[in-house]
Image (cartoon, rainbow, N blue to C red; front, side, top):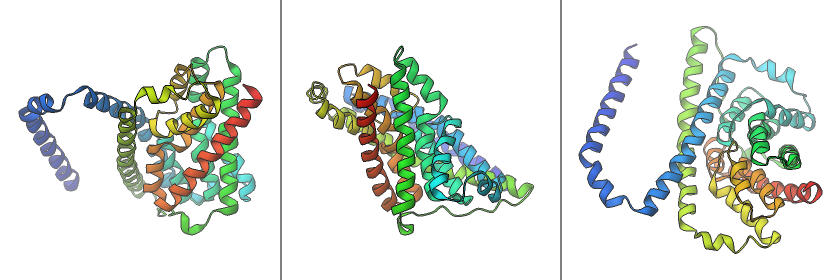
Length: 322
């Protein structure tokens, strides 16, 4: 109790100091720094963070609960022992968890801590933000009267998650992946303490990288002129890689990216499908979260291959269905 009191006092003191400084220096700083580019950057940065934080909190709660309450044997019973079979099962399980891409990383880390094969946990990491009911309903609303677009997104996202899980099971190396530390479940108050510690660690750790990725996305939006983007709208071969790159840097939450894609009416349908497929699996904030959780060596390799698989799958499915 004394520790919590000390932490509470420090938090209140910090908040009071921040309010005092903001009250004294805020107007002067606003006059010096408030220019249209700075205002636009701050708006975009805040929008990305605000989109991601609620789902990040939700899924860190899930991750902490998994680590503290669920026994390891439960996962060994639910998933097939063979990674080749566990990957598609874990990918399909992503449909039951509404959340964005930044929130899936703590859950995947929690699964690995509970003994789930990395290939299956990584397949879940990719599928959860892309095929859950919230995302599919949002896509159907954004592309009203175009059920094939919703189906194409589901097929592409599920296929990419399965392929990446199988690729990791076949070619992934242990030294590339920094596995999260195992936590003991304990019982009673010990489980409550493990839940609290896991929640605090995962949320603060992942939240920092969410902020870094959001800042990078806002900077790109401000630095690249809109006229440069308009050059690519007339060609499918140019628009596909452009929107694949934009999906990485814009960091739009998976629950909202369909509305952004629908607004890009000048681009071909396949290019917009690429945007919706790549974003939840390989955007900047997700890469930053993966680097912070699993290591930089893993994030660079896994994200780059995921980007390529998602683009190729989108082009093939778009040519077939759209």
